[in-house]
Image (cartoon, rainbow, N blue to C red; front, side, top):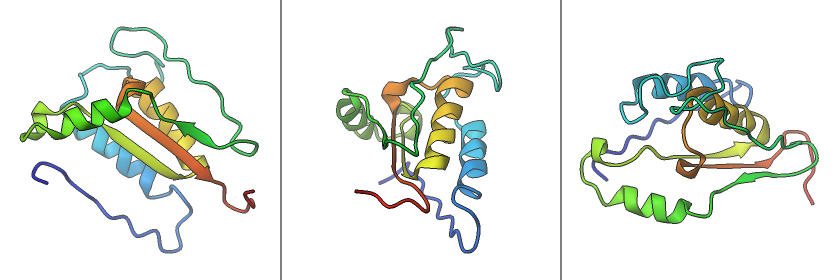
Length: 131
């Protein structure tokens, strides 16, 4: 659809997340729908200055699955606007649990993005059998 961008990052021989994490950080720097000053790197604060606490998920013991209850409504609402700047920021991150967990911390604690605007699914772990 108009206003959406997809960037393909062929991993090749790179480690999981090696290309993705810098690409997400660069995308956040250029994102106009995230308020300026919404949690500076290292401040662990959000736009209102409050610290964003995240449950520490042991990705070696359990699946990281953080999908807010209102996410479906937020995602549907965001798709009705025709212009990119009219839609709220929304991120959907799924993949190997290590990079997903690091990006979850970065977006929520460092940048200050509201957890209701992001879905995180670290549903597999490199070198670990599931089941």
